[in-house]
Length: 99
Ligand code: SF4
Image (tube, rainbow, N blue to C red):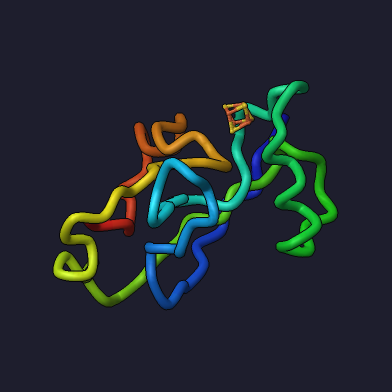
């Protein structure tokens, strides 16, 4: 399946989390090129107005400000709750996401 790759500007990599296991979440992408049939994260299409099939798009988040490390002191961060943060696009693409 062809994957539509796009870079999107975000205000912050950190998102306040409502999950009991973490204070913040970092999802470096919207979408996931693996497109697993059992994936619960496909609900993200509703929130991001993607009409494409789950697995056929990936928005790579780019933020031009560095992570606020002071904000993270004594906080927990869940990396990648709704995507695969080690997806195949990292292999060939110089990622604009710099932590
Ligand atoms: S987020 Fe996980 S389960 Fe969902 S499509 Fe990607 S690899 Fe599969």
